[in-house]
Image (tube, rainbow, N blue to C red):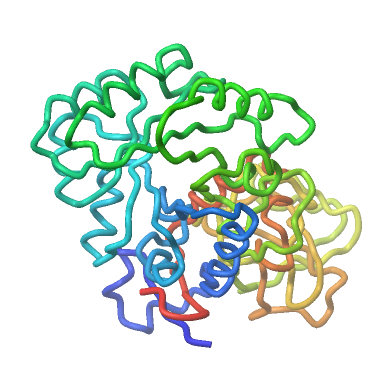
Length: 376
């Protein structure tokens, strides 16, 4: 299994002697490819791999290169993210999900051969005002119930008519986005599907409805294109985990010091943890400045070596503390998995009162190490 390392910019020029901190994010590109195949297979149509927010904290260029032989295309949030991929030599289709913020951006997107979403009147007018941009691929977004972006159902036919009348628009796809697809017992998604179908009935163009939760939980949302995001990275958005998904990121570090506490000893900032019996604590070289959430309570699971353990006390900027009392063989140098194959990220996210998306996007400062094929 090959591996490559991408250091944070401030550390990239340091000599090896200054790069021994054991914290890292290991990115399994084989798992990424597996999850893409699963998404495409479950959906049944083509799939754009969502690489927005630096591939949800996994490295957009590395992930794009790993998926390039498989993916039907990619999706990003805004033009600068598309530009980074094009500058790295990624030639596959790229959809800009937020669309363009100005006519100048539309011209630049066309020059980069990107596909653009149109979800509001100003974007529609910009397209109409530039007949010289031949070959535009436009995705017309329908607000089917999320009430965030997209043309209201009553306005979809007119927007579609205007785009279809533009000779510069070569392809037109109809899309929507789900608000509650990760809640399988809630009827909102079925209502959105019905609304989308009614609003687009009889209109020419391919369809795209399913995000990650749509792919996994809503067969009625299958269309011509899926847009999987979080599932690509192995973090299941659904309440019941899908065993077929494989975690892509393992956030890991190591114990670098050991302390013995006596009954009544308070540990760390705020004295949140107070020993009620003799205990042994390991200091781990990772903290909230690296992206591990400060808000997790004592008891949040970790893996030390091959044994389950827990966070004790408050997470600090550069380190955190784990319970070694029941692990007499653990000590300095013991590997600690904060999340990954053995510690589901959704458990950590729940303990922190957030979601896996946020945790992954906040990983920083630690180097990324790519395994499972070329990623850089």
